[in-house]
Image 1: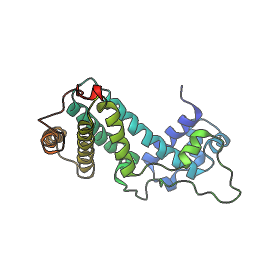
Image 2: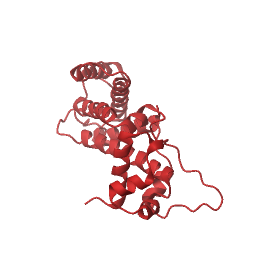
Image 3: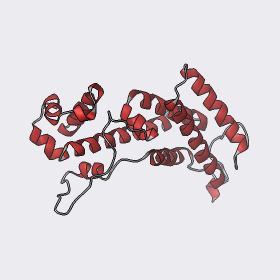
Length: 225
C-alpha cells in the first residue's frame, strides 16, 4: 500500500503532466492524494520541497531501472548494456523529469532540480527522505557516473583491472549513445539496438584490454589476484 508521501508524489507527477509546475497547486495535490494539506506540508515543507522530492524520486527510479536491466537474464556484457541503454531511452521518452535529469535541459514547464537554500534560523526537515531530497538531485554527469558504477558492480566483478576498465568504457559508450537518441530520436527503435551492438563490438577491439568482439565471463586470472 502506498504511503501518504508516495501518494502525494504520484499526485504531483500526474498534475505536472497536465500543466506546468508553476500552475500546480498544493491544495490540488493534497486533494488528489486524499490527504490533508497539513500532511503535505509536514512531509515536504513547501512546494519547492515537493519539487525536490519529486525530482529525487524520479532519479532514483531511473537508477533502479538500470539495476533491473543489469540483473536481467542475458549473460553477456553487451546484452546487459543494450538493456541499460534501451531502458534509458524508454524512461526518458516516457518521463519528462528523467529526460531533464539525463540531458540537463530544464524548461519552464518543469520544477528546478536545485538543492534547498537554508538561511539562519530555518529548520531542517525532520523527515529523512526529505533531507535527502533537499540536498539536491544528481546532474547529468553524476547520473552517467552512477550508471557506470552500477555496471561495474554488476559486470566487473572477478575481472582483471584491464577488463574492468573495458566494461566501464563500454558502459559509458552505451549510455552516451542512448542519450544521443534521447535528444534526437530515430524513426525505428530497432535501429538503435543494431547501431549500439555494432558500436560495442568495435569498442571491444579498440580499447585497452579488449581482445575480440566482446567480453566473455570473468577472467580466471583475476581470481588469483
